[in-house]
Image 1: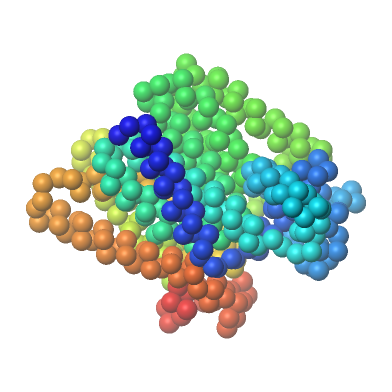
Image 2: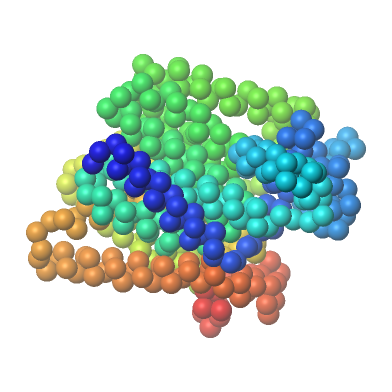
Length: 423
């Protein structure tokens, strides 16, 4: 494929995914409601406090707002706000040119949910492009790569959660996908390894649970690319030093409360959480995206063909540790969410293990292949149906509140007579 055609294809992937996600009507912002306001504060005032929105904060009952030394701040990580600064700055210029006033005035009157969904859809579409490039490192066929893109974009929580609002998950997936792609590029050109430190380090600024891939992938790079490891650490330090300085300035310590490891730990419902994150009718990964069950088959294929490399082992370890971490959180069902929100960050890594399954589709036709393709199509169709409903039917989100608040009645997580995506 010529370079021009390749660029056109990548732009086409971005356009299709972005458009489909943008027109999906559901918006489920909650924890993300201050992301754009914080970004606007950075653009307009060079700080991250939200005192200029005092009236709006009061109207929102100071939802997840903390006061430090007389200044009010969003309680969640600064990472997503930093990522959307370019969008907010551009929108601010538009408002000044077209309307004669700043975006700050507009968003002080309410939560800009449409703008938030727009940015979130862009981030997921960019991740979809990266998924195509990642698949291209193992799949020679363009249609096969597009199958991986389709499953990622329309059969997982990327559609029903990550692009519905500026949760931490969309930026997190983008950073982890960029990291994985750079590591794959380094297989042929090791000089790319140090640059993986930038998105990998920033993934922690976005979401603290990403400490798991940071530790595992850093160890992988140390073992496989020892010569470039110092440069990798330097790139990561470029991100972490300003982050730590920011925390000292705002909180007086290197990390905010949100990053404290004490927020997770073994609890009475730990075993229930382990099961629930996989098979609960409200939060089960394999119930909401049954096509991901085939990732297990992908692992088996890699193992049988003796192609289970260090990267495969590393990603598998990350997935298992992430499962343990999110299950260690007492509030393991992620509050008012659709499906397995806490697994959202790991979707790019799940896609990696789906590649060996799709790779087999080009083999000579025989009974087992027909069975495999048929199973894949059926599970993909079910997964698409589930996340289509999550992205297009608000009743699925209101399941969290009706008939009873899920945070007060977590027993509903196992109610098979009221499956969330069938609302």
